Amino acid sequence: MTDPFENLLPDTRRALHHRIATAQAQGRSPSLVGAVVRDGRTVWTGGRGAVAGREPDGDTQYRTGSITKTFTAVLVLRLRDEGLLDLADPLDKHLPATGAGEVTIAQLLAHTGGLAAETPGPWWERTPGELRRALPDVLGEEPFRHPPGRVHHYSNPGYTLLGSLVGQLRGEPWETVLRREVLEPLGMDRTTTRPAAPYADGWAVHPWADVLLPEPAQDLGLMEPAGQLWSTAADLGRWGAFLTAGDARVLAPETLAEMRTPAAAPGSDSWDAGYGLGLQLVRRDGRTLAGHTGSLPGFLATLWTSAEDRLAAVVMANVTAGPAVAAVAAELVRIVAEREPVVPAPWKPLPEADPELLALTGPWYWGPTPYTLRLAAGRALELTPLGGAGRASRFRAAKDGTWTGLDGYHAGETLRAVRSDDGSVSHLDLRSFVFTRQPYDPAAPVPGGVDPQGWRPLP
Image (tube, rainbow, N blue to C red):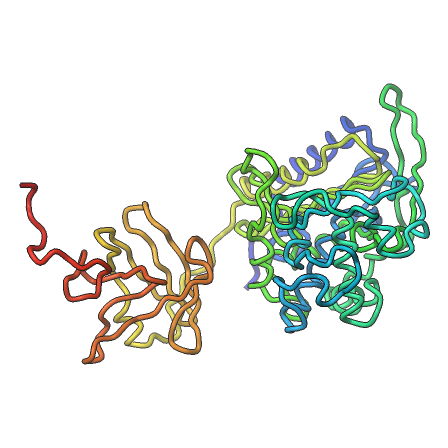
């Protein structure tokens, strides 16, 4: 059945067009392109300015800068999911003799390894990669700025190490692995490590006059995994759709949800931004956006996704500084989410329901606090406080008859139904938290015991 709301409404499209037009004009960018993806499909693309004498469109390449890091992170997590590494492994276990081998893979992904933000020597983004032929040239004699695992400190060399790790374990260059394992399965044939026409040249705009200066477009060499890629709004839209919903050919939705989970708080008192595993996280307009910003001399880019709204937005410009592309991309998401909110899927009953699982549903009590346990598809469970105060979590069924927490305080923890000698369920055990059918049920093994006199008025 055709969705009558598959396409955006005219007023929504005009609002999106107005936003990027304002960004291009006020930001004084030679060109700017934007796109919105909804439910895995690009539903709007718009361009302003000119590239080679014509308005840019969804097929015009721009340099993506650090959005490249999201691709590198996906390659690393593919290796983890295949069992070839553990995120807790020190780098030295798989890539020895770097001088930074004590850093774990997880710390590199989350920028908590304490490595320097940039390489030693001349500005790496504007100089040839040949100047950094080996990892010691990237890291320098003193690669650390903080103790590993202590603080979030963004590090481009850290993602160079991750790219080298991918090459080491695959036995092929990072670029080759990326194309075979990610770009080709997702149909991203306009995402490349070198520009492919039609593409935008990079420019700097004079701060006090409307004149331009061309920026060099250097190949980054070993630094490629940190920022080399060129792409289009259409291709980054495909990437945004993947980061939102997953694709079994590349990475499971569960792993992408792990990438979107905060792994490091920002280095400030603000909790409006953080970092997951290869993904920047921001809170804007009451929603969580996951994705990445990117910049190289001559280019600015941002990709944000909102899994809750099933939306992604891309903004790219060919200018060193000017338009606030991260804010603009967030506003593109907001415009569509607020004007055309997600239409929920029709309610459907479960295809089957185990009577023993049904018997577990309903009210439970952690001490005096009431909770409710609901049965979901795939034998999953949802534990929710009834009064609003408490720790809610979803649980995935395990093969051994237990459940594993998926989110919140109980993420990764084990929930089990403990049975009495007669086979009936005595209580639920959630990593030492005992849930009973009655508040402080004296028949259940409540830690510390229950006063034998029971409930009573205040004396």
